[in-house]
Image: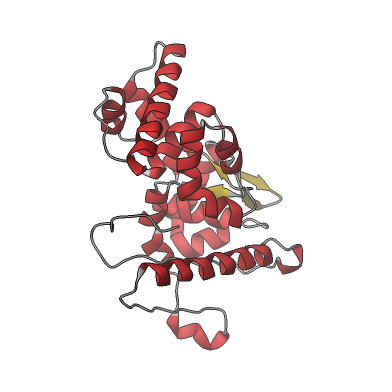
Length: 261
């Protein structure tokens, strides 16, 4: 059954890319790969019929988002071909459900925010009250101000009454890019200030069965939904740029066979 689903996905994705290329005859696979932030080798294997294994979920999302010219994750899941929609829902559906489907997914933004400093500044600017040059300078120095100016020039940031605001307040990144920036976010954790009551850190590990992992993920989803509701409640808004990281994974170099929902 899993092989059939994968074949349906590959077929639907191949047809989508082929149709798009036919409508844009001047476009090369290399150009499409660059614009959609997908490895050109992935597109070449796909279009040559050599893609046998499952394509990375974020690559599928990048291709579909770019071709459909659609940034809203919920809309992509709704309008994509059934095989593609089912695949994306399987990997990203929980996230869309937890955030109410409001987040946008922008291939161009993925490219820009590969830069770690730009990513951190943009994350600050995506808060409801944005950020300012003083905060940027305190955290990233003159280099940060330079990056902020670059993003203003590119239209990614907008300056309103002395505050810098992100073009997309509710944004989502390619999972691989977001993962690359995790160490930079963790660097903001300050164990010496725990007495102030603003931070927390829980790290646990154990060898578990599949059922236990599924149960933990269920609890995490419920917590994320509750935190998201608090963060989007106008009564919660303040001046403290606050972040959380909700992450769980196996301590293995390779993925285990089978999927956990």
